[in-house]
Amino acid sequence: MNKKLKDSTVKNAKPEKDGSPATYADGGGLLLYVTKTGKYWRYRYRIEGKPAIHSLGNYPEMSLKEAREQHEEARALVARGINPNRHKQRLQALECQVGRQSFQVIALEWVERNKSTWSEGHFLRVNRYLQNDTFPWIGQKNINKISPAEITRLVQRIEARGAGDAARRVKQYISQVYKHAISLELAERNPTVDLDNNIIFKPRSKKPFATLTDPVKVGQLLRDIDHFEGTLIVRCALQLSALVMLRPGELRAAEWSEIDLDQALWTIPIKRMKAPTHEKQANLSSHIIPLSTQAVAVLRELYPYTGRSTYVFPNARGASRCMSENAVRAALRTLGYDNDTMTPHGFRGMASTLLNRMREQDTRTRLWDMDLIEQQLAHRDNSIRGRYNRADSSEAIHQRREMLQAWADYLDELRAGGQIVAFRKAK
Image (tube, rainbow, N blue to C red; front, side):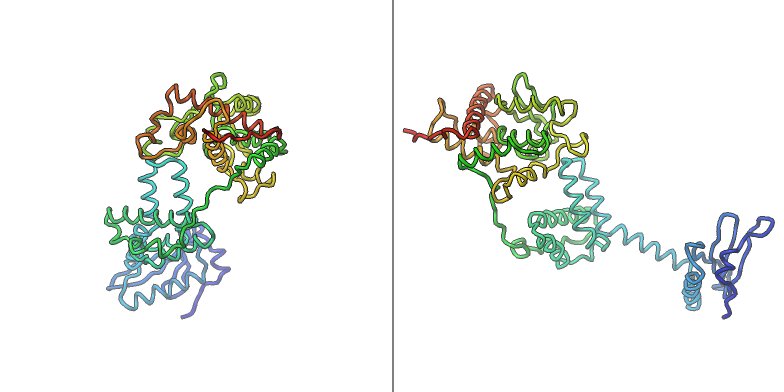
């Protein structure tokens, strides 16, 4: 078949002089249809004794060469008695159906349905793991065509980079997506049920957060913090980490509205604490930290710098967010404390260990019991005593204030590097 059109002809093709559409034939029914608004490739053919036109695409998005290739495919269909227009409609319907059943589409539906019941942190974590670790590998696959072996390779790939906990979470999220799909009759079965964590994952070795419990080393750490050459905001975060016994995330997201410096009380709503999702959503309780005079002094020093911000420790890149989760950890590295020596979470272990040692050996005017330490750490269990039953009573707050003030005074003694308190055995 002789081809009539050239690239230059197509490029320069124009409508008729009166503005009406012009048709440029290439041969075999391939046409370039030119109007004032654009140029369109069309295939004119006959099937079942009737004339028809099949749209191939637009120029210049589809070049002359590409239009001829599409034209040859359509001609081959006509030669086999298949209508190109109906064939295209069937393909589009099939693609649409496959798209609705892709793992990614169904997973995003699951996220959308459940995100209102999740905390912001959980939503961000789920979305991050799906986008970065799941969709690139199985996102476009039909949810019924994903095998257990594919899921195993996916999660083991995550574990291989040293993220064992993340790998287990991703497997859990995939399982929940399948449960969602099965409930809506979009999937036939859940392939994750065939996967045993004890087989596909390496054994977990729980390693406690590194901390310092030697009084001499603790004193040196406190002196190093006082001489930290970074920002005032990070230095204050380090100093308070040692005084208030909070989790790193609870500390860095502190808001000034939670703190009453005159009453020396810090009240954190349960939605910001480590707690079950339904309790965070209800937000009907709180965790109270009686502030020692040293903690109040740190906050008063910081207030002129960040008091107009929502956050006590605003992010260095903008006050609309709180301090990054790595700021305190990076500061410790700058001071020479690696991850095997001291961690942001390690301040809690340091306080718990030394306070219990002080309690057992009674070097203070009063004894505080183990429960009081656990309440200040916001630890809880399923026993009667573990349900914060005494945590917020006026008596408990008074006792915890005495304990935290004794703790802050003890840290001052260690910081001074003078006489270390010699623990006396309890009689």
